[in-house]
Length: 91
Image 1: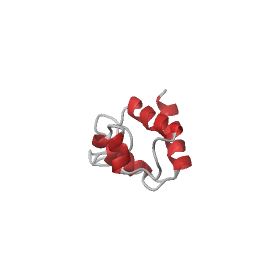
Image 2: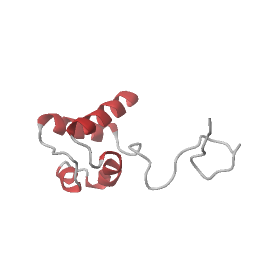
Image 3: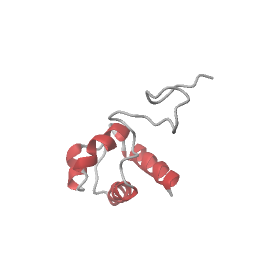
């Protein structure tokens, strides 16, 4: 098994290895924001695949890059699966 470091700190440095850079998954998207996306998807008010315009209509334009990095090109079932699993991990 190969272990890959996720940051540039030397091995043995204090702290937990945290992925750095522009794509950190959905960590910086709040739980309430993810719930908003899921709610609108269930209501049929959000079309998939997701777009920056669709996310801006929900007031999430500032999170669109993070959300799209995780869910770009997914159909509704795929987006729903990502959201439900992410929310389940957080709650």
